[in-house]
Image 1 (cartoon, one colour):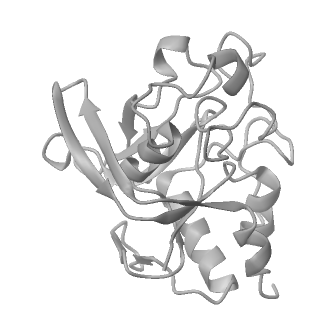
Image 2 (image 1 turned 90 degrees about the vertical axis):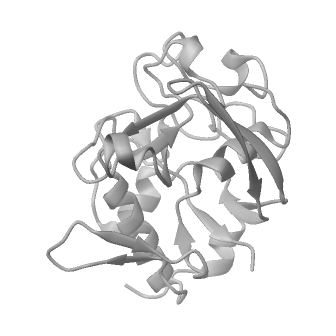
Length: 228
């Protein structure tokens, strides 16, 4: 495959300013504040068309070029990020060891990556502390309006920073391990999906699962990149 046009991909990303975000875990009843450095985040979840262009794979259960890719594991998502980085002549952020499931992450690399969950929540809330960024029917596909399937990205209203589908449509993998002492290598995903009730589709809702084996039809991802 020839190199991918990096400027074209940059046009699909929003620069998120630095700031702070208040995080919470309802399971452990804890709260903490995280600092977020400026970074770039894609306007949309990765679509099936984009995923196929990079990987030549079409794993999604609900087919459609402009629908979000789903039925992808956390490892599938970081392999996509690494491949995209290589094709755009950037330094991959992840190192996958041959014949092992261990994956290491270089936060200083200039390639594409998954957002941290603090970055994800901060970007979703657009610098506020709100649990949504508008009336849910106007901003998200969820159980009440999704027709029980994913929908094309970018149809609902964006948040104040120009990000679409941060809530609903598909959950989105984040880079973080959820709680290594309790859940081992389980990774976080955020945002709610097409199958979820309104009470689950919030900027603060956290879920987790196995990074290698877990794939489901309401879980995808969007790409991030360091700003410098």
